[in-house]
Image (tube, rainbow, N blue to C red; front, side, top):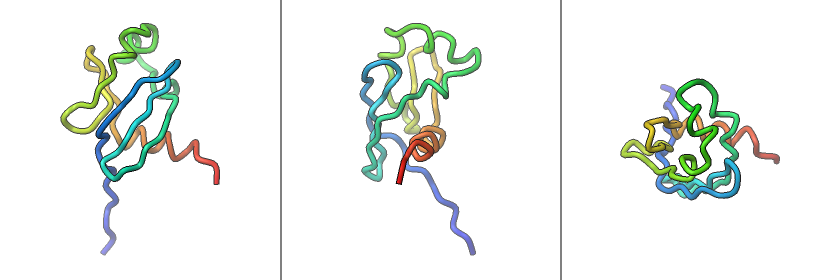
Length: 88
């Protein structure tokens, strides 16, 4: 029987320059990611254009990256972005 992989929740976030965030997952993985490619669609319009709003990123109770306007990025989505940018 195959076991479904579960992406651990994000436990901390620190906003850096531009649209970079330093995130840490519950499994200890830490990465810096440019989330610009994920900020598309109307839900992210304010976060995409307002640097002060972007700087207020937090982690919600489900371990997602979230902003005060209720826009959010799931930990799985952010992990995929981080892994796609890795060079071996």
